[in-house]
Image (cartoon, rainbow, N blue to C red):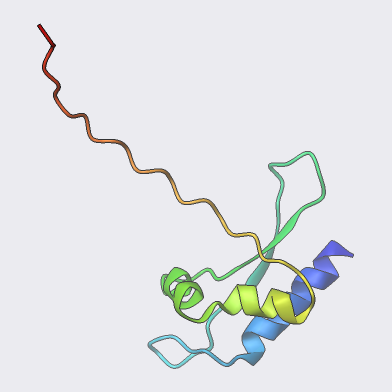
Length: 90
């Protein structure tokens, strides 16, 4: 059941008709997630332009919303805090 729903999301993304530099359709794939103790499937855009297109157009988010789903993206790594030098108080 999860895979079928993920396939529907992928088809919705493909139906939006976005293309990459060479004119071909933006690739979309459904992946089984093996690194979890629960059944999990994800829909991904395996192309360098995928992150930018998701940020600009919300391809996956909109496709999921059309199917009454909520897209949950990956968490960006936190930026390391810069160490600032502090003086000891006297």
